[in-house]
Amino acid sequence: MRHFPDFNCIDIDANKFMDIFIQNGVVLVRKLIDPSLLLEINDRAKNSYLIREAQYLNRSNDDHFSQQFEFGHIPLSDLNEPNGENILSKFFIHSKIPGLYSSIFSKKINILSGYSLVRRQVCNDKLNFEPTPFHQDCSFLPFNSLIINSWVPLTTCGVDSPGLQLIVKPLNAFIKPEDFNNPTATPYQNIELSADFIKSNFDGEKIWTPEICVGDVLFFSNFTVHRTYMTKDMRKNRISLEIRCMQG
Ligand SMILES: O=C(O)CCC(=O)C(=O)O
Ligand SMILES: [Fe+2]
Image 1: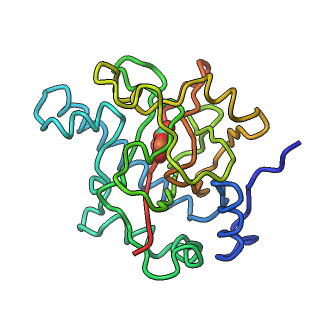
Image 2: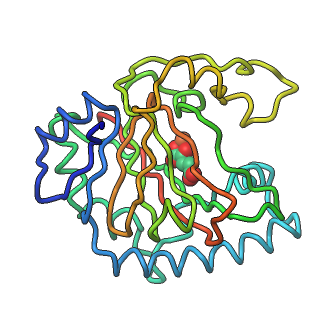
């Protein structure tokens, strides 16, 4: 049986993080963030989604916002503190994450705030918020160099609520999806790597669907193949943060 790249934060430092990340394209680091902080952020996020949903239904937002909302996103700045403190300084900059990145991004770390978002995956499809298909983030990010996504669920996910499923493999190139340039396909179809492609290129041993607890962080790159993992039995929605960084 395969041993997945799953570590407790006390068992991993910057050099080990770099080695494991290069070997697997994904690393899960458990107990990295104080869960009480994330539960508080989750409450604020749920409230923002209520407000944003009403705005979306009233069509009182611009097109860019509406399109992002249909993909489940709201801006990260919605989660700033009531006193205006930026959410990134509140939990990310002062967390252990920049330290873990320090061997890979040896100079400065550039937080891509424009590509750092909140995402909610709902379990019922009343508003057509679909789960993401298998894709690489490089299919929509405008950079060719390495980007690491710190994927932070605000509640435990992967069993009762939607999690992520990833291909554990070191990839460093864009794989062009069949419908990448098809103007009649939906945005998700444009980035989708088909079930046939996944079946013929990756064996089942490499497909990982971890249960991720609040406080754990899943790291993967703009080349890692992944999708939303959602089953018919799941009843609870999940909100998560995607914070993307590259070499400064
Ligand atoms: O939230 C999800 O289910 C998908 C997240 C994702 O694709 C990403 O963060 O790149
Ligand atoms: Fe993605």
